[in-house]
Image (cartoon, rainbow, N blue to C red):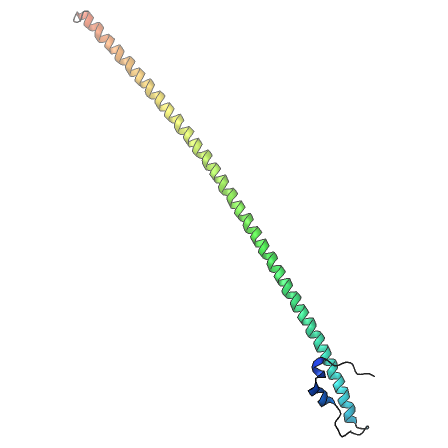
Length: 153
């Protein structure tokens, strides 16, 4: 069974020296050597698994950060859209209120002009009546004077 390639940090000279057989070769029947080789293999396998998991975690973090930025951009766009819609609604309401105000002011003006015209007509009629009454009294006074013979022309 061939040993799988070791990760770069496990292949460094200091690690290799500690994993190398010592100058005094232990006996081939030593169970400790067999256990150390198995442990080194397990350690190398754990390191590879750890590196894979670390890479997967880094990729996941990168993807999650990208997704979060995307969601933030989408929320900002929705916020701006809702703000713009609200402003448009408020502006439309203000415009409608101004139009209603203009109509109300025109109606008030028309009512004022109508009342003023009625008052002028009433005043003119009253003045005409007073003129007629004065003319009638004046004519009566003249007739009386003529009957009395005071004023002859």
